[in-house]
Image (cartoon, rainbow, N blue to C red):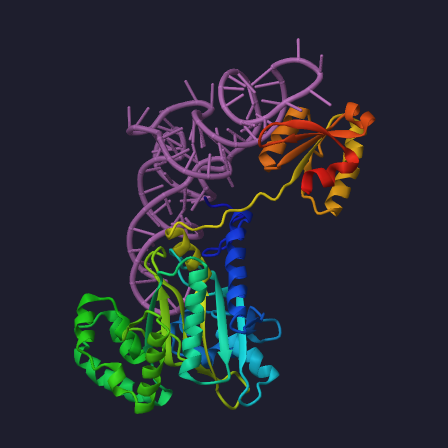
Length: 417
RNA sequence: CUGGUUGUAGCUCAGUCGGUUAGAGCGCCUGGUUGUGGCCCAGGAGGCCGCGGGUUCGAAUCCCGUCUUCCAGCCCA
C-alpha cells in the first residue's frame, strides 16, 4: 500500500512486536562479546565524506554509487555511514592509540546504502560489528572468527558456513592485479559487460562473477594465493592451521574477495539460507585504515553481521523471539467513587513494579473485561461500590476464571509473592 | 542504477464483458436486562479502489505516465 505516511523507499519501520527479537540479538551480542573483552562504542551516523573515501576505496561501488552524501549549510561534505569500520577507526585514532595498544570494541546501528531493495537488502539496514584494533597477528584473526561463530551458536545458527580467503598485503595486490589483468584481458571479448568494466575498475571482483561463461574463464585463471609473497602465504597458512586446531569448520573460497579496499590478509564470510539471493549474513576481515589527518595506517580485524539478514536466517531456521505480554493486572472500575480509588491504587501498584492497564474512558464492565482479556493480563482486579465499602477487590484469574475477594492492603503480597 | 512484479477497509484478499449506492473473512466498536473476558448471536463504524492524466455517456476495471511494494542483477551485511 502506498500512503504518504510510509517511510522512504528501502527503509522500514520496526514495530513493537518485532523489537523483542532485535533486543535478543543485541543482548546476546553483548553477552558473547564481553567474554572476549569487547566493550560497546557508539559513533556518529553522520561523518565527513572523506572518512569513507580513502578507506573504503574511491573506485569501489559503495563509494562510487551507493553513498548518501550531501553538503550541509556550512559547505561540509557529509555522508550517512555506509559501514561501521571507517567511523570506528576515525573515533579510536582521534582519541589516540598508544603504540602496541589494543582496542576491542563492538557496535550496533543503522547503515545506509543507496541500492534497490530486495530480500535482505535495504537502504537503511543494521549491522552488529566488532573491531579489534592496533595489533597484527593470525591468532587475533582466528579469535575474531571464533567469537563470530560463538555468537552464531548463541543465536541458534551453528549451521552457518564459514568461508575464508586471503588478499595478501597491498604490495602483493599490485603484482596479483597485474597477473589477473594480463590473463583476463585476453578474454575481453567473451566476458560479460560487468566483467569488462571490472577489468579497469576492480579486477578482483571478476573472480566473483556468477555469469557461466565468465566462470569457465575464471576457473582457469592463475590462483591468487600462488602470486602472494611468502610472508602473506605464511600468514594465511597459520590462520587455517589454528582454525583446524580449534575445530572450526571452514572452507577456503578463492573467489571471496569482498568489495572494500581496506582489507588485507584474512577475509571471511558467514553464509546461511533464508536471505534470498544474498546469503552472506556476516562478513569481515583484517584491514589497514588511515583515517583523514593520520600519518600512519592503523591495523585491525573485525566483522559485521547484517541484522536483517540474521533475522531472516533465524526465521528460516524456525527461530523467532515472540513479544512477551508485559501486563500483570487490568483494573476494572464500576462507579465514579471506585474509579477514583482505582486511579490511586494503580499508582501505588506501579510504584511496586506491577504493570497495570485500566479503563480510562468510563466504559461498561463488559468492555473493560474484553480489554482485560486482550491485554494479556494475568489478573483482573474488579472494584465497585460494594468492594469499596468493604475495603476489598475482586480478583479474577484470567487463566482459569477463578475469582475471590482480596484485601486492598494485601494485593502485592497475595498476588506477586 | 538495470530488468521483472505489485497496489481495493486496520490485516488477508474477491470484484465478471467497462454499467447504479465497491464486497467477504479476520480484526475493531456497541449490545444480547440491573456488576464479569474468550465461544455464539445481532447491529455498527471504517474505502482519494496508490497518485496524475487520457479514452468513454460511464473507469477499481482500458491506455499512458508516475510513485510504491516485492523479486532478481550489480554490490554487500
